[in-house]
Image 1 (cartoon, helix red, strand yellow):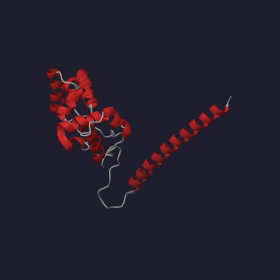
Image 2 (cartoon, helix red, strand yellow):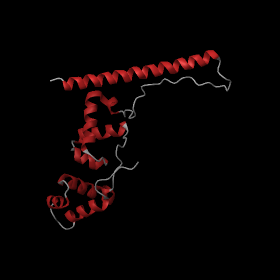
Image 3 (cartoon, one colour):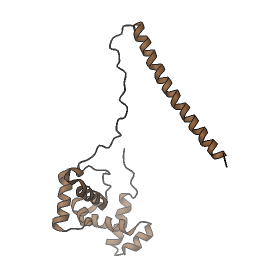
Image 4 (cartoon, rainbow, N blue to C red):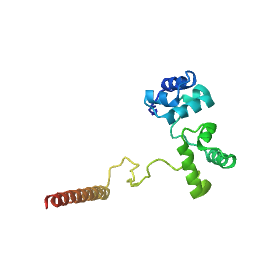
Length: 177
């Protein structure tokens, strides 16, 4: 799935060209085009550093390696460079990305920079064992299967009944003055 880009490449290039080639102020161009001056300022810096590719949309939620994150954090600490300069140097879209790395590194160390799994945790792993044969079920197996089905149905009905009672209690509470 492709990420939606708020400002397209041509729009960014036109705004940057107005500032750099027509010698207009960042604030006036930003005001005319309805964008923030900080956005335009960032576009100009990326354009100067990387050329036309600096204005192309970046991959969102890019996974950086631990070594890369440590390299960026050490460069900021040892060379005393600002977050915006680090973003330009290492081609990172936002300063907030580096800020979150710094926060995690201070709390957990290098282990905090490890990527966490992003999917939902599996909460229910209950799956009935499937039969491997095509033989008809024995009477005992049929009864066990029916018992399992009835227990599941009973649990669903209990939960539904509890929801209905909770809703009725909520309605009664609203009606009483």
